[in-house]
Length: 183
Image 1 (spheres, rainbow, N blue to C red):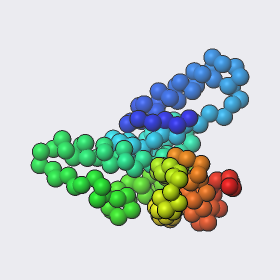
Image 2: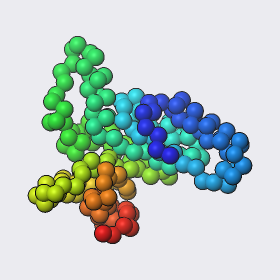
Image 3: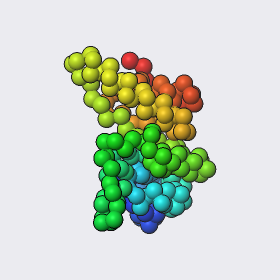
């Protein structure tokens, strides 16, 4: 299960209890494998990544890094402080902003320490009728996924199957992981 909008370990406990209750109430789930993957998309979740996996217990499958929502959450917290200066959000890149890069490296380390899967951000590009747009999008996706694979991520999401191979290739090349889908 993809678990978006969680900000604390306590919310993961709710899901663990829900999964437990579901297995108890629905006999056909007793032997079914159930897993949850919280989306780390808020500053409070960053501080509780380890605790969130622990709270999910046997249902913890991994953590998913959310780029844009996480940046928005950080800016939301920064903007609440009148003494803070907020940079242009388009100039803040995960790969080149040390604070953000370190968050994603920590996410990977937390997952790997707990035997969970670190999942990179979503490639949001959609296919176009314009081959040049697709080429530029593919290059951007490839660069992002190479960086993520080098940080220890072993999977990522795509918004459209058109970009699946482009997104999966860096993980497959570096880790032998990724999609087995071939166009």
